[in-house]
Amino acid sequence: MNVLFYRYNSICEPMYINALKALDINVIEETTEMTQKNISPQIMFENVRTILERTPVMFVMSINYYPIISALCNISHIPYVSMIVDSPVLELYSDTVRNPYNRIFIFDKALYNRHKADNPDCIFHMPLCADIQTIEKALSGQQTETSKYACDISFIGSLYTEKCPYNHVKNLPPYMRGYFDGLIQSQLQVYGANFIYECLTDEMVAEFKKYEKMYTFPEKARKDEKAVLAYQYLGIKVSELDRITSLKRISDRYPLDLYTGSNTSCIPHVTNKGFAKSLTEMPLIFSNSKINLQITARTIETGLSQRVWDVLGAGGFLLMNYQEELFDYFEPGVDLDYWGSQDEMMDKIDFYLRNDNIRNKIAENGHEKVLKYHSSITRLTSILKKI
Image (cartoon, rainbow, N blue to C red; front, side):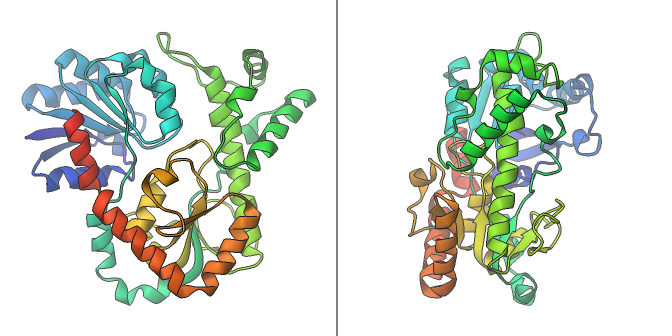
């Protein structure tokens, strides 16, 4: 049994490739885009078509969605499995989403609800999972690395300062800038309910486009420019401010190791450790941090990001912001814990740093639950049943 896996170097790709192989499925990898980032859709199409012509496959798979691959699979009558791990994914507005050979799995329930009507029989809600094989391999030699990664509190991730397009929009009229900034500040105070999209109008988008060249939808796509403004601009700005204000407040009181490529001059008391390698270093950080923080990007409305599963899969204690889907898979205070405000965040950090036994027991429970119910092999088995 063969599967063609189209790769572009997502950190999630090895997890699903390993799971496929563990189920005795032969994986053929198309890797051109990993080294040629400006590959054209035509070359992508030809590369995949050539493989399909010479090798029979059960399905084609990728992380996130490629309209050109969907079109090719539809022509070839081969299922196309798309694992959506980010939000938003604007390619999901493509008219190709309606193709009957698609099998699209979306981790965020709000994102799923926004797109399911486009192809109800072929779009599914599916949470992410943990790559237990890779995590255990990384942890197998950790005895010699414990002191290097040991800390009270850690966070891994971008501050979004370098990739927030709203920061570069110039010359907005004061009334529009004021309204948007007010929305951003209001959303910043609320976890678990995203309301920016509903507070925008088509007229606002039209006015905004006079000052900023936004994403252009393909001709046949279902166009939603409000979504572009809400998530790619204002939502990312909320994420930036949320991470900066949270990490600054924590680091002003407690030691905090931050693994990031972002400029941290705005958070002077963090210890900037630079980038962490996803497959080898991150599990060691998760395992050796007393508290692992997860500050979810606000463009993820209800779902649990990959970091949640990674931390628990490594046996780390996780403290995160409230997300609606959290209660679907875990019991707060038993498997992990969450905050609903920055004041509550600080109170829980203080509590868990002072109560090692409680913290360690919660980490153990979370780890056991992920091993039992949320491994990549378990998740892939569920996916295969729907293909």
